[in-house]
Amino acid sequence: MTLFADTSAFIPLLVRSDDDHAAVRDAFRRAIEAGRRVITTNYVVVETVAVLQNRIGLEPVRDFTTRVLPLVDVVFADAGLHERAMARLLRMDRRRVSLVDATSFEVMDTHGVADVLGLDSDFEGQGFRLVP
Image (cartoon, rainbow, N blue to C red; front, side, top):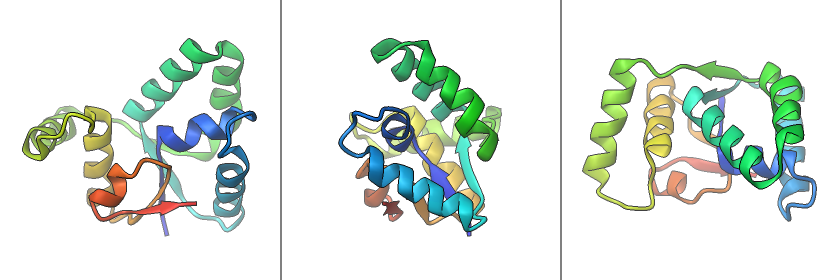
């Protein structure tokens, strides 16, 4: 069973002082140990790197690149996925849902993924289950 990983999980996974660090770390560890496939998008990778670099610096970016990403399959957005995500974003007509989120929703639908390692309630609003 595949698990989608969102920026809202990657940040607390890499920031030990984050209130959600332990819960996200444990959920990620359980998924990996269970042999669960974990996927994300290159858009989530870009968003995660930008947030980490801006808020904390390059050391967590290095950890993300060397320790986390090797355990995750990254789905790269092509023109078709980008267009579907943009159309979904515009159909949703919600200011707080980003193009990154809409792309994640499209990838999850395409890959039949129901669970997301993340803390963003917008995923629940689209019918996905949040882990932890």
